[in-house]
Length: 284
Ligand code: SF4
Image (cartoon, rainbow, N blue to C red):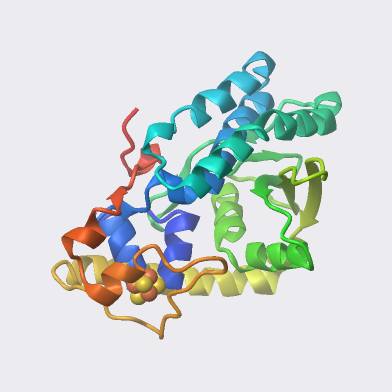
């Protein structure tokens, strides 16, 4: 644990709340799958897209469905989540088809596809979706929330450490990121079909922004290491700022634990976090 490697997700959690980081990455607790079906859906779509960019065209649908079927539907207890599970299941093929429609005519062997890159001396790691001819690509599945949701989505992506960490990792491999393109794959909703909205985040590549990110990264990683080494037995972890404890659409996963304590009733609602990065010790 002393050599913890931070990916963007760990860094975003750290920046959100020290205590949330402790619970997710030290205690290794997370919410049950039924509370993160949208995320699981994104993972399933990603699995198919990865096969596509690797040139394994016959595996695209199989890979997505294999990942989605890892969800044990018998463990979904809330009827609203079961309704969501069914709705998302019915969206998988349409989302993949729209993606393939857009890209299959222009498929080229990519420079990087879902490769784990680590900078051990800095303590960061990550797995960019794909990178080709100077363009860093990422796909995000999303729900049309109406109003100016896509503008908000873009701002949310700009605030994430994800693409700046990827840029650093690719630079470490001698590759220069000239553009960042996020393809937002919008799920079908009502009579609206699935669609793709491209977002460019090139402002993250301005030299001043890269320099500032690097300074903030060094600061945050040093602080993260300090907490990991010195606060092993401290609960909760000291906060760097006041927390709102409410996300954009729902309260923080740990809100009951933080308010009422780690009672049996509150702990039973959490499950062990599964590590997906091989460099952080994921099981094959
Ligand atoms: S409930 Fe609040 S303090 Fe507790 S982990 Fe979540 S954001 Fe942090």
